[in-house]
Length: 283
Image 1 (cartoon, rainbow, N blue to C red):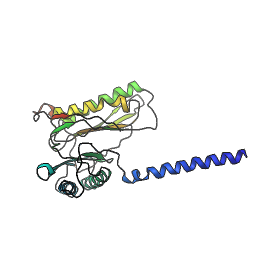
Image 2 (image 1 turned 90 degrees about the horizontal axis):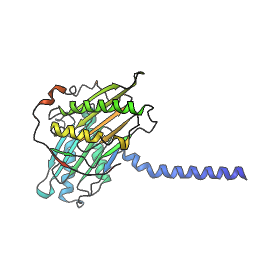
Image 3 (image 1 turned 30 degrees about the horizontal axis):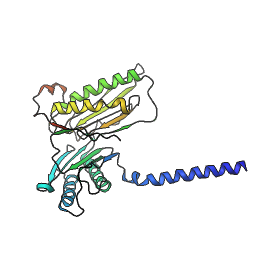
Image 4 (image 1 turned 30 degrees about the vertical axis):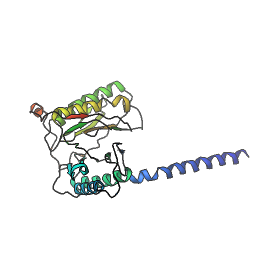
């Protein structure tokens, strides 16, 4: 009897696991790493705004003239104007970038039906749209984080110091970029065993140098909340993002992008400061 009761319990547990997996399956099919349906109004299905949104997103992922992975388009007139920004990781080739943007756009519209503003992304790209201008604005919300759950690092203090040293250096390099690219990647040794941290930071290129630097600085300030002792993690703001891992996750051999910007250019005169829009939500 005891054996039968134990088997019955295992069967119940198995059924619960299956039920959970089935409930999560649609999210897996959607494949979005993060998303937020910003609650700032709704549009009506088949309205002019709806049509403009579909037209705008299509014009982004079918555009073959832009090859730097950054798109900032608008479409429509007056209250029906839709603004959108899409950004790909700098080591992603143009065709893969457009494919990622298409998948992210389709998923975002499907997951945020009738929302006039939304943001979401896959592993290699981010898409956002709104019924207000979002160009040349440093925005820090909504924000998201993802981290490695496999284990915690043993030397937390040393790991954190090396990570912040690397992120600060890369933030300066990214901020020095031009209106096409604002990114940087590199590595740093952590300890005598020569373990390394690899990191990539990126801003939307429409930001000024100071706005890009501030955005990345504020994003790194979330590390104690999300991934202080984690061997890998990332924080995503609408205007910037960073990622670090103990294994190299980017491809420096990609030939569709220029090398990271020269940090000596940080003294160049930046555009006028960008305005800031605050928002708070974690995932």
